[in-house]
Image 1: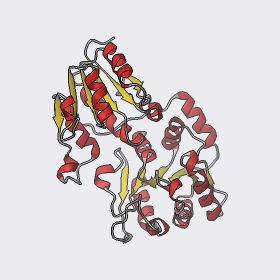
Image 2: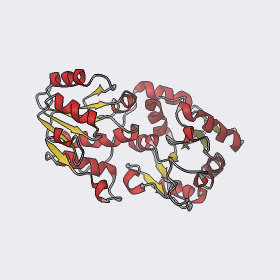
Image 3: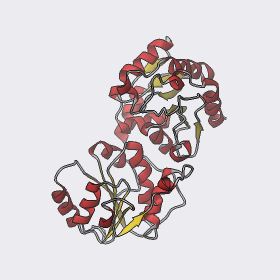
Length: 333
């Protein structure tokens, strides 16, 4: 066991949040010999493939004291909590980790030895979230100039991806769903179908429509509406690791801002992130990688609309296909 160890406690949000937070681990390696992550069960398979982490532990939401005792046995020298809640603050405190860095201005912030004001709460809408999270590492003298998060698929992931992508034509990944899509019963298909057809025609490639198992009906509906044998739905058929391997093989990834977008960027795929809502923060959540682009909102949303509260998702039905194609072409030039 390394004598000088740190813990990255990132147990909240979606897989994209945990993947972006892994940049903090790279910064911590400047000072610590080993850096582990403590995360949600659904995020383990993502962080296990991040080379900046030496180990991954699970916070399953169970007994806090039992989890704290386990952490105490690990003898961590520092803990960075990037998703602060009353639970995560208590667990780190109960584990008696000497240095505990977390968010300021919360009723539980007294449990942290070092408290950081989150820039977004001060009105910052332009800093990338990875840079905001690095403020936690900077509080204890750690930083990195390399903001690209990394994801390494396994050999098994590569095998699964090979089976899914088998065929003579190159392919483009289209990811049309975010966390709201499968729950709202209003997610329009026509904008995505038009984009799928345009991608196929412009880049002479198959289009694989991806997503989670919950997104499968939407993905299948898009493929049916497109009416082209070269456009197929594989939502729900990939693990996150196989998706990463698939993205690495793809000619490009095109999709709405979600965790899959960040995974695609992390494996080096040409990645176009679509931010259709006026309430989105593309500067904060843009994909980070060697070849990435963002398509910002252009449709005039109703006043007060957010992705969680919208009556028709007209911006999805009216995707700006020409701008998206131009963004993809710019990455493939």
